[in-house]
Image 1 (cartoon, rainbow, N blue to C red):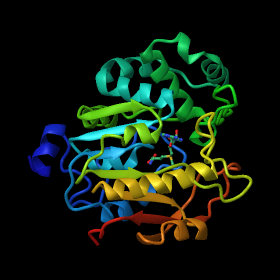
Image 2: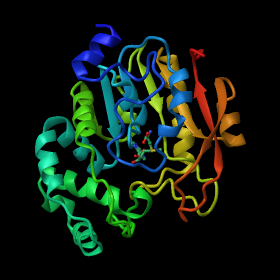
Image 3: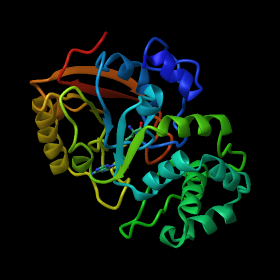
Length: 292
Ligand SMILES: C[S@@+](CC[C@H](N)C(=O)[O-])C[C@H]1O[C@@H](n2cnc3c(N)ncnc32)[C@H](O)[C@@H]1O
């Protein structure tokens, strides 16, 4: 099936990745480290043809929603996030019904934040996640050592919690996806020759204020980044197309010196203060020649 036919089946005008420059399905969540602004560079860095698409650090999954590729394996270690995508894939109308009942206020935010996810049904958990994500400070998913969400209220009551059409389009895009709540190594276990693996791990912290590794109660440490470099090499040796993005650091460039590298300047909007709107240099690393 060609891309136009897939786009027709998805009910979107054309897939974002091939031949168009705008996004057709936007990520339903705002995610720290989300790659929406990097999409033009990512689109140019995708292999021209591939088998299954693997995104084992999916977060907001900006590239997946942009490609809406038919065969995909998506994973993340955050159970709330994976539950949300499962509910969105399987019961979008029910999720929208729940979202339509919500009101935004500081007291409602803290009442919702205090709920224990494991006491809730999957649909309630998904509703809670989207509510907290849209109304918390900077959309930041941050948890304490006990795994409890602890980002404060964002103090904005005129927030659009969801876009019905976009949620339905995202749900359709997910119909073909396998979702895994797992460590990234488990998610990519079945990647084979010709498959495309996009690795977008938590950033290597650039300063002591960097909040990017606090997605889950387990931090993604320097050692984890070394292990990831080994995983990249192993996937490349298996014949997969592998693309990795991270903030540019000399250490990273050196670690991947045998692979293709591209520096991209990108505006950064999420940091611990929320006001550090400077540019950041991203590094794209691949084991194949990008399309450019
Ligand atoms: C930079 S974000 C990914 C952003 C995503 N590409 C987007 O467009 O929004 C990194 C993600 O990795 C997840 N993560 C952290 N450690 C992980 C691990 N060991 N295995 C799988 N996922 C992990 C986090 O929960 C977070 O959602």
